Image (tube, rainbow, N blue to C red; front, side):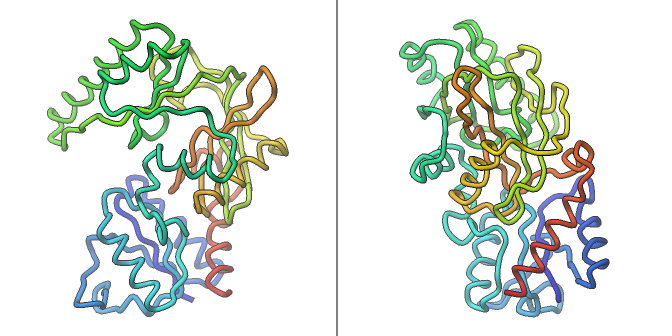
Length: 303
């Protein structure tokens, strides 16, 4: 069996783990960077190899490679090659927009906080006249590891938010990167909690999780801050909501963030992340997440 592993960037060379786990199972996993592909009419090649030689396409990450992800989706349909994740065959990368994700979750009856989307920072300032603080503000697109999530406790925090966004633009210019355009802000009520849950889903099933303790009160709600502890068993109510969320947005391999309201115990989805980082989960729980993913890929290819 041969599985294509598509990726854009690989700062930590995580593809090597997948190759190693595949070899242990007698499976060939071939890492393919999108820019290594070529298209001739309706045939896609990796070097001299036709992609029809593969038994499954695994999209580790898509990022900005929207054109290639759609071409690969069309190719997979034509040649009846299964793909992971399934969402790439429907909304595709548009699901990365938090507003789109929220719509899908609500339509499927998954617990998700009340949400309002505004276009510009000025609109955000006006809209907050209708809200009771504190609230959580998110960038609709981007902001991994909580860096696009902000806790607004008082009106003055909006000035600090504007400064943070301008600072990120300046850093982008200094580093020679594309300057981000910050538009599309989601507003949600702050849900009181004693920490949030991060669970890892493989094949729409929760396989591991840890709980992050309540963090220091800062504007940027960086999920990398705050102590966390692995869970021997993820609470059943958290598992139920997480698995429903994964199915609602068709993300087979996901990292899902959730909180439990300390007032009534209701569990809410904060975010569903495709292409989740697995190293922290493995460290916190001692579980071989990559092996679980590879085993799932093999099982899907064999169906």
